[in-house]
Length: 437
Ligand SMILES: [Ca+2]
Image (cartoon, rainbow, N blue to C red; front, top):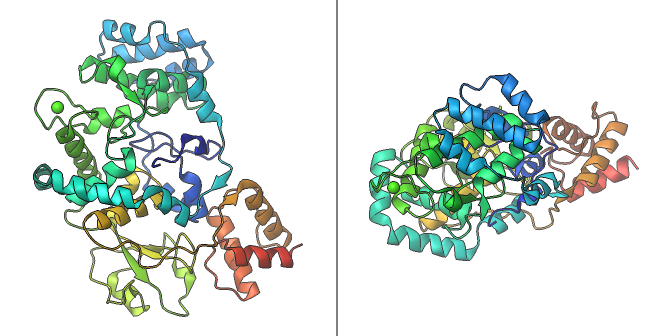
């Protein structure tokens, strides 16, 4: 951040591929937010390479780099990539050690909501977003007519992904995804991405030397992975190529097309910031606790500014990623669509908050608590060990604050007379240290 440095990518966590993007560097945030279950619900599995039998993928892993590339080439030929294109892109390719270094780094801390939003949404980013919205209004409105995604949301994604095209990455995409396919345990996913990257070259959307992206292969203004590019890229300007690097019509239409295909509901927001009443039962805040507008109103939930909750379609759950002292978010259906783009709750919140500000609205009405500290893995393990000693957690301490640990924190908070929001706030941590020295 604008994009969180890829070094934060927590590769020790279970399946973490985003649908559109590189491995999610922000999953740990989501775990801190106690919302890991949300990912399991909303995520799509990474697209498997089409028509690639598993034995080929298994061969890839054990092979040396050149043999691995030969296997990927065989997969690409079966997908219709001409041998000349595959040879030109793969011959003489070597693994990129920078990519492996970035991939192997583990995050030392999980970010808090407050820190995340500070990184994601600067005053400058809001101002430039407003400027971009005004400058490209006609094009954005035409795209909205065709795909149903509001201009300020398209601009917000653009701002978060690449700083409005400022940060698009300078890694060779083919080399990055081939390196990750042949040198990491995620062979199947990245072999498929390599094949899709070759398909992009075969279709002459972009030449290999120009096809640059993030270290994990996310490309252009939208930071699409190759498979998302081939599935959802749109040639809006009609020059015969999808160009997510240089053509804003293609960039906007491709983003909107992805969101449209992922279930975006025309004209709707992704979340509503809400206020919870005094004495609210925080065990109702859980991703499985979806309720309709009438039910939430009956429980005393209002908009953050005190106005009554508007009607909304379907049922929605509430998230409190900074605990009861921080802002609360009613996650509307489009929130789930944002999480198909990037399966991080904090990312999805950022999109909604930034979009609203780009449209001229206010930011958060309730700020995250300033004293919330990023949780290191060691502190998280220490927290879990104390919960285990109190017989409130029946699990191994793994340093990941998931739904089970969060439930244990709630149980401790109830025992200690604290508000049972399941959030490891400084006060909860201090009380836990005193109770289980
Ligand atoms: Ca084009």
